[in-house]
Length: 279
Image (tube, rainbow, N blue to C red; front, side, top):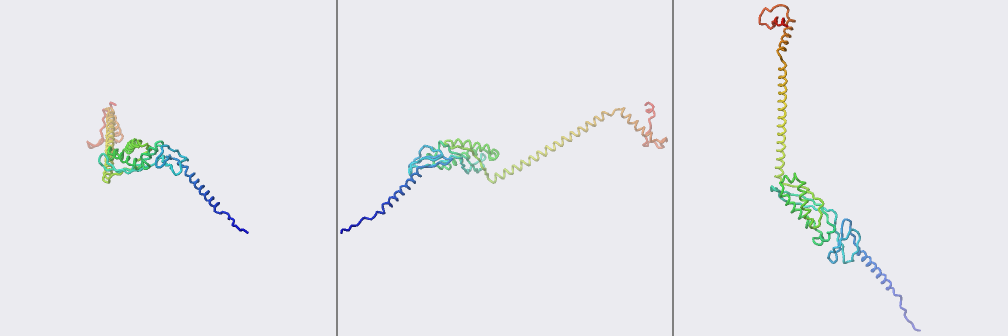
């Protein structure tokens, strides 16, 4: 009786196939996920293939890309703030430290040129050096005191020059603020002393004006009194004087007891009989 061995079932084949299927599925998921890129709102995207930028500018949203070969670089087009500290000298050679804040944005259509020629650090490469140079140039045209008194004018001039400078790189200046001007302690003390002197001079001027006004008022009052006295004198006529004399004599008659004074030269007035007769 011949005996033979029947081959057993091959258990490794189905397991190996399942593993392969899982691996392929994972690879497909990875490849599929790597085939899409999302550009965030407020940004634009640029394809980068083997280190080279593509000039095609991508708008916000989801975009296809070649897996493992292409990447998408995002460029912020929202308003961004760049702050710079500068040191300069005024026209009268006073040292001035200035803190400048620039709000700027990137022109969407020019994102490729900006990234291709300068790179992502354009704020430190372009904006900060431009701010320092322009602030020094503009500050040198003004006296130190005018930098404070004409702050808006100085900021406007700096903004105008900076806008022209950054326009060459397709950067848009939205707003510029001079946060602070700092001067030396000696200059600050001189400004304070000058302000005190001006206040004292103003007070003295006001006092002088007040004294002048009071003097004019007194003169006017004296003139009015003199004019009034003059008018009163014009009203005194000989007839009025004679009438007053008669009134005095009548009062004296009322008080007279009929006896003549024994002593001449007394205070009792004599009666002018002739004048009474003429009346």
